[in-house]
Length: 88
Image (cartoon, rainbow, N blue to C red; front, side, top):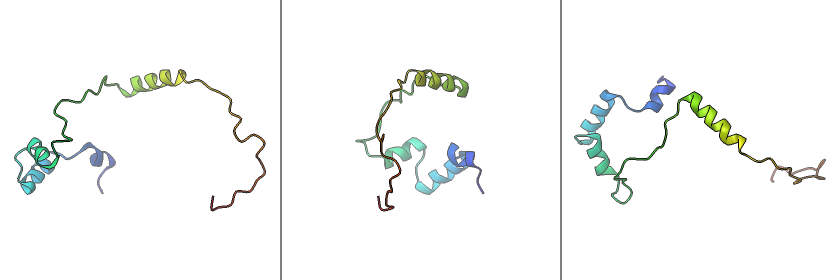
């Protein structure tokens, strides 16, 4: 059984070599150019923004969440003790 992390990190060098051999491509870039249509192929580097450590990300997300505004909702008030058929 393959470890969870191995499945999500991507292929290792041996697997890449085997894939290129089977497809006949010389490099991963060549393989991508052969398989991805030009219309959707991005020609520039992705702007991914700042890279966070796990701790930094948690702090950042907590700060963002603190900006949320809490409102009272009255949706559903007075509707209790009712029966909802399973088809709904």
